[in-house]
Figure 1 (cartoon, rainbow, N blue to C red):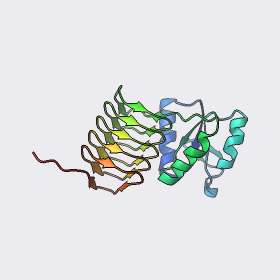
Figure 2: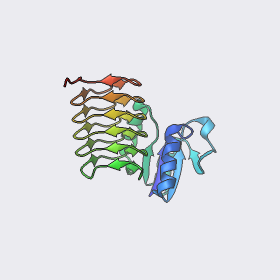
Figure 3: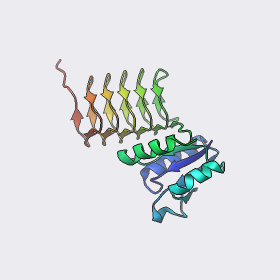
Figure 4: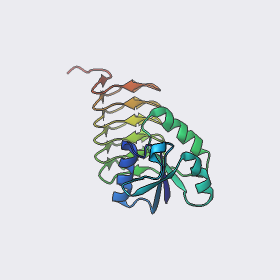
Length: 198
């Protein structure tokens, strides 16, 4: 796999993905594309930032890249990048830390990032291009759309339906049988959903 990391090279997303790739030997050849001027010519944990995103498709044509993963955490840019480059020959693999736990019955789409200490429970359905940061828990029979971002220590109970382009911020929790609509934001430490009695 000749993998391109798209965006957020100098921010958390890029560093976390590079760290997993190096730890797990998941890619033979990794390069980073970032539009920020201050990123050009630099590297992340030894992986070079080779240029802006304008260079990506020519590098695909020249055989330098065959797969991509999106490091950007912001929902809008994640969705736009995935839509744009899904029309290209690029593949979007799932990048999954071996320090995470995934049920064998969980089903994942394409281009998802799962960082260390994430738990994905049984019969969980996950769409495309989602980002799960450390210590997030997704319990059984939950469905998740595409282009969502789960910050650190998010806790999602069982039988939850999460739509598309949802951001769940640090240490928030979602109770069982909740429905979260498109473009929702659950803030840091917030609790969302019905509260059960005894």
